[in-house]
Image (cartoon, rainbow, N blue to C red):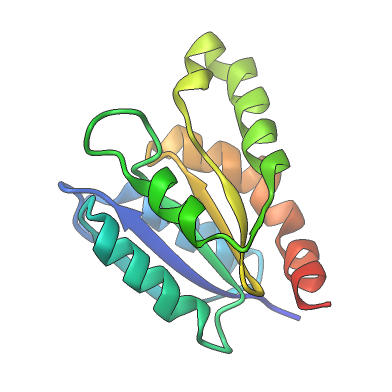
Amino acid sequence: RDVGCAVITVSDTRTLENDTGGQAVVDRLQQAGNRVIHRDIIPDDPERLGLLVESLSSRDEVDAILITGGTGMTGRDQTFETVTRLLTKSLPGYGELFRMLSYQEIGSAAMLSRATGGLVDRTVLLTMPGSPAAVHLAMEKIIVPELRHLVNEALR
C-alpha cells in the first residue's frame, strides 16, 4: 500500500518558495507512489515541533513523518533533542547508516549530522539535514527503498 507521509522543514529562513530540501522530499515520495498528506515549514522551536509531531502521529492517515533541518549542532538546532524525547522506539541504525553513507560523500564532516529516527507510537519518524545533497542521499539510499517496509513493521 502507499504510505501516508507528513513532511516538515525546520528552519528559521526557509519558505515554500526556497525550500528545495523539503520539496525534494515531497517530490521523491510522490514519485515512489506515496501520499504527502501534510507539509509544513516551521522555525527552530522545540515546543512547536513537538506539538506538530504529536498531532501528526495521532492521525490515522499519517504513517511516516519526515523532518528536514535542525539536525546540526549549532545553538538553534533543536530537532534531535525534540524528536528523541518523543520517540517510543529508537531506530539507531538509520542515523548510523546515514552518517556512513554521508562519510563516503563528504568525509569526516558527516559526524556533524545528528540525523535520527524511530517510532512515535506506530508512526515512523526520520530526520535528515536540510541541505539538498543530504536530503537526496537520505531519500535515495535509505528512506524510499525502506519506507514501506518500515511502516509495515511499525504496524505489526
